[in-house]
Length: 167
Image 1 (cartoon, rainbow, N blue to C red):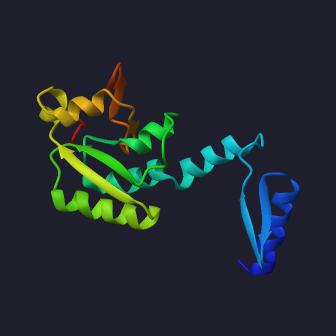
Image 2: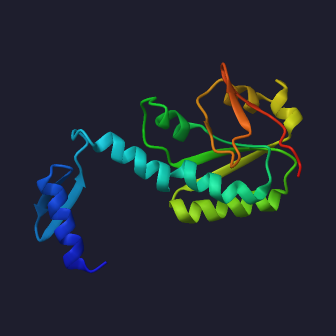
Image 3: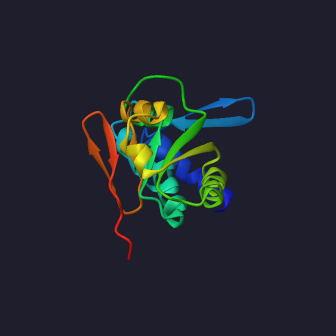
């Protein structure tokens, strides 16, 4: 996009109150006006289109997992828990998957998002049980289901992986 076009569109958004700007020296700093009534809906649209849940879902689709969940600080912020911005995206992959494929998907997602993606793998049996302390912690915490075919269903206190039918 040509710079004059970008500047014109930014100015329109500033005039509409959606963006705020200020000048520091010769630089013009622009940021979202979070108090504007459309800030939350626009944030949601951008997150749904370009955010971790969309990118993780797309990149982990080829892995063939029974379930893919975002957990940890990113999921907590997404669900409204106050705290510092997350420095990574924690991803649980449930299924009999190839470890190299999972880490390749994480690398691709990390490249697209510009934030570290930290995957962990659990078998369906590990996920169904309560012997694994990480599984217990994830089930008790906010999560975001990004399974490409939505094969992980919510239940009270967490999520439960459902086996995917093999075609």
